[in-house]
Length: 436
Image (cartoon, rainbow, N blue to C red; front, top):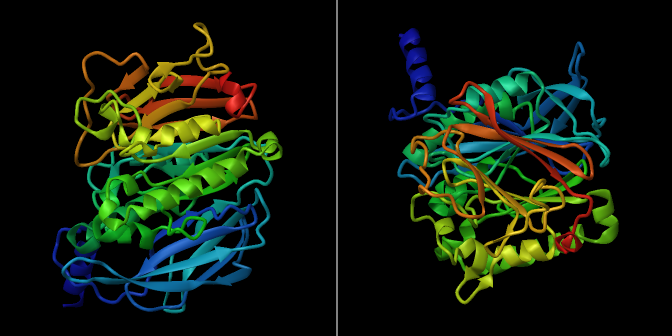
C-alpha cells in the first residue's frame, strides 16, 4: 500500500494534468536564483506545499561543508483556480559573498532539504565580459531549447539567463500544476544561474499573481519592472502587458513609464554612462515584427511603439531619447534581427558595417525557445527594416565584451545547435549623441 501511495505522489508531481491532492510536503522544490543587483549577494527562491522555515546553508565550492547559514521568509500563496491550491514561496538572500567566487548551497529547513547546488557569485565592477542566454516563450510542454540550454549551462557558457516573458503556458493552468511542473523542469538551469525575467501575456491570469509570487527580482514592483547593472551594461526589464490589460489599471502604464524615464535618465548621466555605457532593455511584446499574424507589432501604429491613444506613453521615443543600445523582445515564436531602426527608418552605421556606430537602437526578437503553440510564420516579403528572419526553435547568446563591442548569435535547436545568425554590435559612442 505504501508503494502505491509513493507511485501516486510521483505521478502527481510529473503529470500535472492529473487531478491530485498533494500532501503538504515541506521538501523544497522549484529552486531558482536571481541577482539582486549587488555582486556580494544572491537570492534563492523555492516552493514548499507545507509550512517550514526558510533557510539556506552554503559554503565555498569546492569545500567539505556548508560553513554559513542565511535565513529568509516564506510567503503564503493561494492560486486563483477553483481548488485554491496553497503553496509557500521561500526567499533567502545570501550576503557577504566574494564576487566571482564559487559557492555550494542547499535550501530548506529541518523538515526537509534540497539537494546541493552550485553557483558563481557575479563579478564586481564593469571591466569584465558577462555572457547571457536570452529567450522568451518557453513552455512546460515542448520546451525544445531546454536540453541544449542545460548543456550550455553545464559547460559554463553563461553568467545569467534573460527569460523575456511567457512561462509554462501557463503558470496558472490546471490550478497552477503546470507552473509547478515548469519550475521543476528549469531548476537544473535556474538553480545555478541567476534567472532574470519579465512578464508576458501568458502570465496575466489572476492579475499576474503566479508570476509575481514565484519570481524574486530586484526592486519593490513585484518583478513587473526593475533594472540592474552587470559588467559594462545597465539592463532594464519592464512589462509590455500593462498596455494590454488595462482592467488592472491604466495608472500602471503611467507609473511604469515614469519609472522607466527616471531609471533611463539616471543610467544616462555622463559619469554613469562612462562606467556602464551599454543600456539594454527586455520586454515581451515587440514594437516591430514581420510575422504573419495580427499581433500588435504587425500594426503601423503599434501600441508598444506609439503608446495609448492619443500617443501617450510610447516606448520608441523614450528609448531613442535616452540612447538605448539594444532592445530584446519575444512573443513572436521566431527569431528576427532588425536593422538599426527608428520610426520605421533604417539608420545603419554604413553599408559595409551596419552595426558599427548605428544611428538608432537595435531590436532582437527571440521568442522561439519552444512551447505548445509551435512556431510563428513570417509574411512572404521581409520589411525594409528586417535584416534576418529564422523560423527555427532556438535561443540567443550574448556576450558584452567591453565598452565598445557586444557579440550576438542565434542558436538553432532544429539544426543541432548550429549558429544561424551572428553580429558584432560596435559602438564607439553611446547615448543619444550616438544617433547623430
